[in-house]
Structures are given as C-alpha cells and as structure tokens.
Amino acid sequence: EVNKVIERAHRDSLDPSSGNSLRQTFENMVIGLLNSARDNTGSSAQRSLSDFNQFKAMVVSGAKGLSINISQVIACVGQQN
Picture (tube, helix red, strand yellow):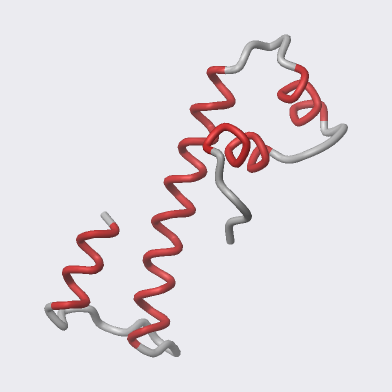
C-alpha cells in the first residue's frame, strides 16, 4: 500500500488534503498505513502469546505497559508515531 502511495506521488496523481501541503498529505498517508500495519501486527502478536505470558498479563491487566509495547518488542522496532 505504501508503494502505491509513493507511485501516486511520483505520477503527480496525489491530491493534497484540505489544510495540508502535498508533502504533508503524503507523509500523513504513509504514517497512517505504517501505523495500521504496526497495530495489526501487534494484535496478531498479542493473540499468539499464551495467557500465561507475564508481559501479556501486565499489559492486559493494565498494571504496566500498552499493547503497542508488545508490538514493539516482538517486531523489534523503536519508537513509532
């Protein structure tokens, strides 16, 4: 999907969203797609963890951390938007 947005930008067929420049529109679209991919991966990763996994238990109980932290640890990524 990101490649399609890049291709649209190269072909000048990307229209700026209201109040944004073409560059801002492009960045917002790419960031949105990448965040969605990260969220989907995180959900899948969380479902794959055992209910006895201590990290998952902390996140699900609300004691510490967020679902995004599971995504980041399993996918080995840094801080995301």
